[in-house]
Length: 247
Image (cartoon, rainbow, N blue to C red; front, side):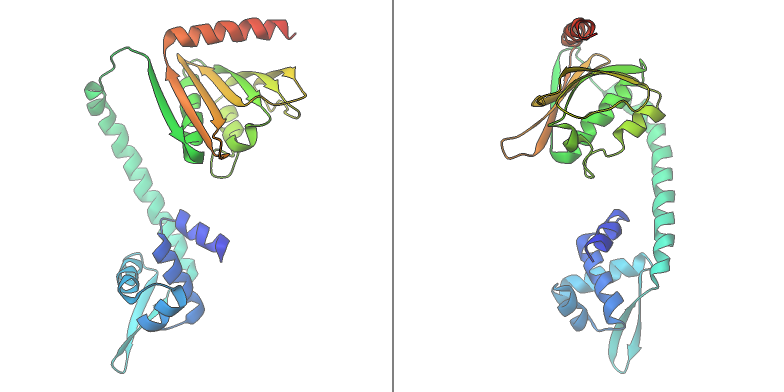
């Protein structure tokens, strides 16, 4: 059930909703007591969760004697839930585009260097998304790639389709690589600093920013984004000089 639970949570169901719904699928029509025992959740939480699942059209109920029995709807209705989620997201995206002009004047840009920190795989994705958004303005960026860090970028919880999205957005990248492996995929050029060992940091240089991704002592990824035109120009100048030397 592990993979099934993961898919249900991607549809927007929380852990309790996923546990109760999957319990009902295997139990058939059941009382709150039986559902609680199967799902390993207390009755009060099950009662609230069933109400939420009913609102999503995933659970219904009927009365038998003096007792209320709940039953899971056919899993095919999950397609309806997915469609509703998609429609809600599209509506939210349209509304978001409308309010950006209203929010922009409120943003105070003091034209001073800023450093932002991001933790875990979700943070890695945020850093990489920022790099693509920034590089889209110029159509290119430069990067120091590391075989030690790359797996954390393409991890399923980070940004596994990062390269595909870069190519889709027609962004060209020049990469100075360290460590074994690594190939070109399209709209990119790669030169090796060394093929013997990877560097401890993955660095991206783009649109007035420098981003770096590395690992904590515990082995979890984290990243930073430095927004400063001077630092960006200096990093790009050093990169260009090294790039030419590696011909």
